[in-house]
Each structure stands twice: as C-alpha cells, then as structure tokens.
Image (cartoon, rainbow, N blue to C red; front, side, top):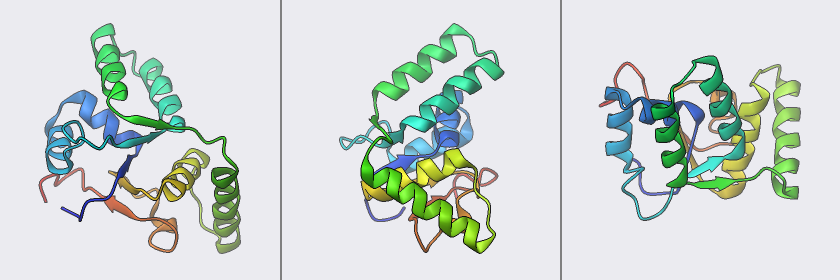
Length: 147
C-alpha cells in the first residue's frame, strides 16, 4: 500500500465496490475506503458518470440504493472553482500540445484530484498521459486486484 494520502476515486473504483465483486472487495480492503475515518473524495463528474451508467445498465433499486449509500460515505468535490477550471484548461492544453488524448470527464477528474492534493485510485490507464508529470495515481490491475 502507498503511504497514506487522501484518495480521490475514479468512477471505475466505485462501480467495483458497488458490484461487491472480488476486485471491489480487494480495493476496499487494501485502501480502507469505506472503513477510513478520513473520507475518500469523489469528483462530482464521477457522480454524473455513475448516474448515466445506472441507466445504461438498467440497475435495479437495490443496486441503486447501494450506490447512494456508498456516495454518502465519501466527500463530493465540485468543479466550479477557479483553481479546478484553470487546471482543467492547463491539462487540456498540455494534452493537445503533446498529441495525447484523455476523455474530457477524466480531465475534470484529474484537475479535481490535483487541486485537492489527492492521490487518484483507478483501474484503467486513461490517466497515463498525465502521470507522473501532473497527477499522482495508483493503477490497480483489474486482473490482479491483490497484487
């Protein structure tokens, strides 16, 4: 485990925890996300992505309730601050100038992580173009959650 810093959770981390599968349980246990006194952070953009996923995957009331309960355990961060907006613009410019591509929602999540001084947890490689120059992150291999 990395030395303690406050974590900001990518959307895929929350999806795995709600699914309560082996990956979700391993992540929650390893990083003490739901047991920590210090609440992990979640960007409000992630909430939008989760709400869209609920509709796309036709989640039932029980799984939706689990998601709502989970979100209550975390601190939601807005993107409407001068610092986040400025950081988003800087990241977007860097990516365009370097010819690298990151989805806009992930740029918002990255900007929020940076301004919060947090450490991003993710199970995808979408943030690689920003790591380590801009972003502190841990990539969790979905095929080897206990590694």
